[in-house]
Amino acid sequence: MDSRILIPPLTEDTIRLLKAGDFVTVQGTIYTARDAAHKRMVETIATGKPLPFDPAGQLIYYTGPCPGFGDHPIGSCGPTTSGRMDGYTVDLLKLGLKGMIGKGERSAEVREAMRKYQAVYLAAVGGAGAYLSRRVVKAEIVAYPDLGPEAIMKLEVVDFPCIVAIDAQGGNLYTEFNKGDK
Amino acid sequence: MRTINSKDITEAVKKAAIEANTLLPTDIYQALQEAYAKEQLPRAKHILEVLLENADLARQEGLALCQDTGLVVVNITFGQEVHVEGSLEEAVNEGIRRGYREGHFRASVVRHPFRRENTGDNTPCVIHTELVPGDGMQLTVFPKGAGSENMGRVAMLKPGAGEQGIIDFVIEAIEMAGGSPCPPLVVGVGVGGNLEVAPYLAKKALMRPLGKPGPHPELEHKLLELINRTGIGPQGLGGNTTALGVNLEVHPTHIASLPVAVNLGCHSTRRCTVEL
Ligand code: SF4
Image 1 (cartoon, protein in one colour):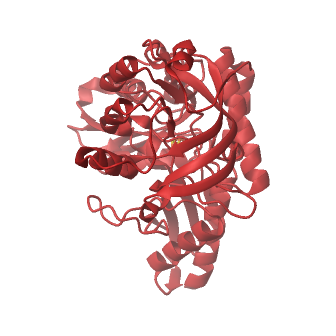
Image 2 (cartoon, helix red, strand yellow):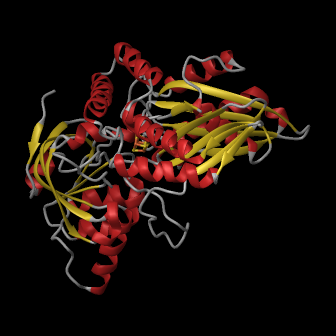
Image 3 (cartoon, chains in turn purple, green):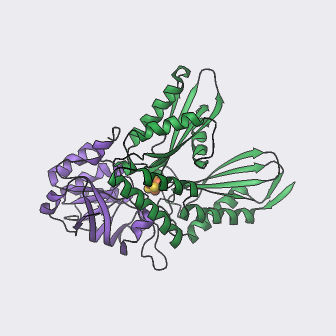
């Protein structure tokens, strides 16, 4: 499949070119965070302290991977359901986060903020954890090691495949095909 | 009376936990292949191809099929003539503990539902036992991810709602779930019993291999057709393959009740059954 290459940090000019349905591959650095890490980050923002990494221009990948072993820097690492992060996402978009990678639909509030702050939502294939782990060449914990699989990790990825599910103009593959998703 | 040593149970559960998480059951793999051959939408076809490649890689490399290696359900059919030396519950949990450590699987269980500290070894699992005549013992290890489990639903319908009521409820559950439970799905439906039996039946339905006949094949078939007509497709991104199969189980119920439960299994519906 033809796909556009995304190398964070991403600019608004790049974001504007992406349309729901496009295949993209991500190269370079992305950060993992899921439920517990989001809760802590948003609490940190509220106190005015700096986050463990600067979200400006970056992509957050919603995953809680299996541990690496042998010559695997990381174990299975597919996306988790993004909807659980909806309540935390707007605060990060305000700080310049340019995209999220996950699975499943986002809330109206997140979609609206994505338009306002120009960000994209990318779907990785849920449940393809073994397949996606082969696209990660390096994984390192950068914050909250006490959270175990929910710690924030910095991943180096090569040809990490995603589909643009919601673009910054409001184009949305889910509303096209799903009735029930909020 | 036949005596089974708890050490043998631990060993069997450990092996089953590793196998369940790394080898996609043959019936699911074949259903994915058939869906791949039939799917029309290029994006959906591509996703199905990725899922088949994922299963191949997991098998070859001993990697977990999915990082959500789940809260494990262990169903035990227990012969009445069997005596277990030691604690059955401890033996099963020790098997899960060892299997998850050796398999390098994620620890996904918290000790308390609102304090939420991770137990670190993916125990305890959920154990169901069914007593049967004889001196055999069969264990099914069923790791269940939360993405799909969280989308399950149960309703106490009015008996007058009948078959159509069941159909409407199942379709509604699938439409509400959209892409979150990782379609293509295996849909488990439990009908009858009472408030706790219907969801148990729905979970048990997911443990039945696709293609193995259940009590209501016509209704299963009809549901599958309707589900695939929703257009939700693989990952909720459109297509004809929303479900790979529907398994429905029934149980006697009260004259005034029609309990229905839906338990959604994702494309990574993993299970491994061992005999002792
Ligand atoms: S729903 Fe299934 S395939 Fe998807 S992430 Fe959860 S366990 Fe994995």
